[in-house]
Length: 83
Image (cartoon, rainbow, N blue to C red; front, top):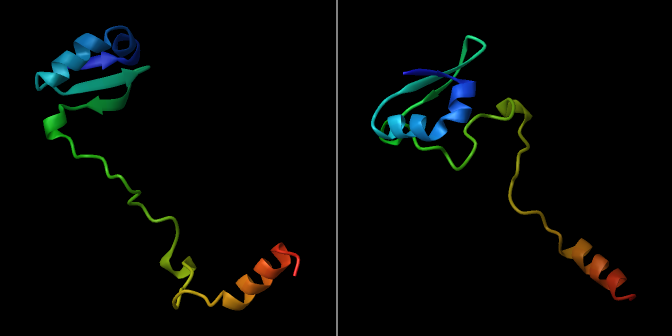
């Protein structure tokens, strides 16, 4: 089935019912294919976490373990309490 974005907006209940019935719907806007609506049982579940990299691995910071903040934390606490 194919529908325009305007038809999808105006008749979404009917179009969603068709998808629920197993039909795949192509949505077009100004003659361009912009989306495909597939039945839920055929779709991949969305990932709760981003899966695309945000840069090259060479740009990633290296961590050797937790930093020792004890000296600085003591100083900050002392300053916070006016000592």
